[in-house]
Image 1 (tube, rainbow, N blue to C red):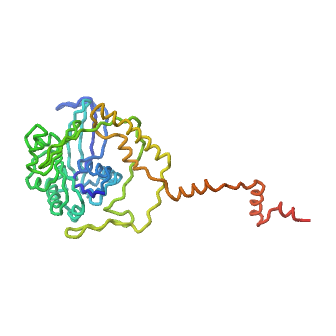
Image 2: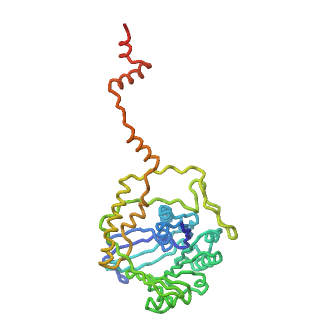
Image 3: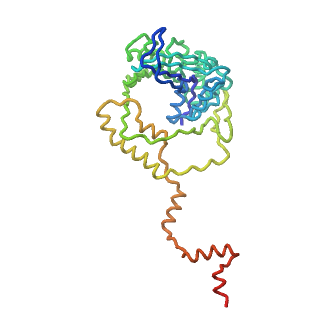
Length: 379
């Protein structure tokens, strides 16, 4: 399992849905309002955890209700939050207005994210113990640069999403292994509007680039290799996904029984995963009904995959794949349960006559001998 550290932002998105966005000085009536946990760093952490990574988040939330909600959302998604600080003041927020045409306007208030302007004690050791470091630009640039340089010193692969787009120093590019901008951010960094030209131009700064193109997929380029266009995938499920509730995953960074793992400080060898001395509770075997639900849906998806691919380009993820991801792979029947069931089916049961059963119950109630047996033996 890949060990991933995310150094970045956590925001509470305050989303308002309107028919038409207001102009300057105009007041309009909205249709709906939602609060959605987000932030570019938190989004990366949750996506990486759901994809199977072992993820730890370095960031900051406020000492308000939003901070509590953001922390619990990350933990529920399987993200380790031992290094998610709680700062005095409000959490970061993003105020978003979405109109019926899909357009949006966003105002981001950093809040607690603005306090993350340097690496805290032990943060470099955590980065050094990881395989990959994920970065974005919703926290102060000084912290992003410090994290990237720490990863470079310890040979950790660094992936940067340059959003929100802004001019970046050369020393940050020198510490990045993979740059992942969208087409607008690539144009901002290079001044080239064509995504392919912009991606090739970015190779002067970093070894490899992935330019995301929305519904058109993405474009991968690297030094010394030909560009690779990756089409997007469209979700067209033929059957509704099986309901599933994600649960917090056990983390390499912390054991629920033994407490926090020893923090690997710089210069120390990587610590082995903490293991609890207490025996883990036995998990219930998945029933045939549970396994059958996922199996039937998977077979239906495989039967229609070729037809769907031929009809149109694919975009996004299949809903079935997400359902299978949350539900987890099918587990084999417990060997102990199978042995008990097979032994029961092979051994015939002996039915006890009702009269004998009634006599035994009477005997237990009367001190070991039934009244019927006593009267039968008396002269």
